[in-house]
Amino acid sequence: MLDSGGEATKGLAVGDITVLLERARQGEPAAWEQVMGLLYGDLLRIARRTAAGGTPTLNATALVHECYLRVARGQPGAIVDRNHFLALASRAMRQLLVNHARDRLADKRGGGAIHVTLQEDQASVAQEADEVLMLDAALARLAGEDAALAQVVECRLFGGLTETETADALGVPLRTVQRRWQLAREKLREHLQPG
Image (cartoon, rainbow, N blue to C red; front, side, top):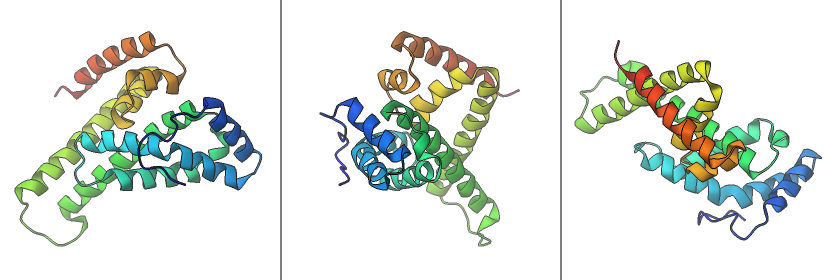
């Protein structure tokens, strides 16, 4: 069933997942479940990297399950292969982290209607939420300028993919990802500068 070891696709031919996705597109529900079982380890590995990047209030398992629900609610039949799936999962994780940050800030600003003095750890969670939202806004501006750069950032930061995995997910050469990643970081720094 679901492999939580992080090596779900190790030893599998890439074509196996592609074949299962094709069967899912043709209406075979069990094929989609098999795909998710095979890719669960990849999702968990990505989520662990993402959560380790500073999201103490959202654990990796919760992130994987929310990501699964988001991808499954979308158009799973439109997913072409493992790489396409990982790119979509990166985007879903970005959306989940941004929504989580918004919820945390809403709670801080009185969304829960119970007012308490912020403890130091609560203040750091609020600061983290602010940073995620600022990064998301800068990334949205970057996407308006160059969508390809924004895709690399989504895969690297929100999807936790390596440069090689990002190249595979986006279907571009590794060197292209490296150049885009460097340029995207420079542009994001500019967008994140005050004033």
